Image (cartoon, rainbow, N blue to C red; front, side, top):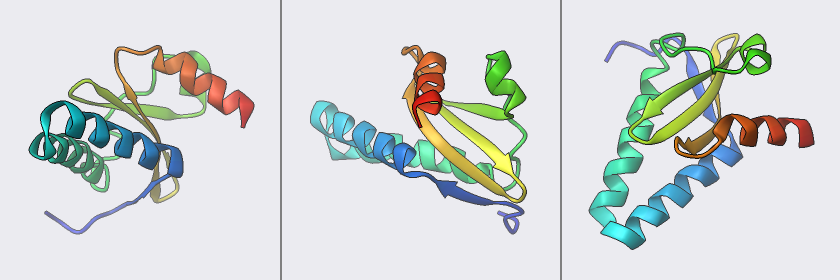
Length: 110
């Protein structure tokens, strides 16, 4: 791959989300499954170093104004924002959850 144009910072909540996802897959389907899903998520996040604006803005007017994007990886939603030359990964939610309200509530309480 070409040299990265942007850096990526996975924030603590997103790192914990990724670890929880890996643990769930480990318990349900074994280590290969856990490795596969985490690799898919990390590979998708890594592509943001080249194309950070390739994913749409999140479908919420307030979060869209704050320029949050979402990236779909299988059943997971990666919420991120590009600030200057860094992509900040905020959370990784199960797409079946009410991730928009969960994220908005977290922002309001932080």
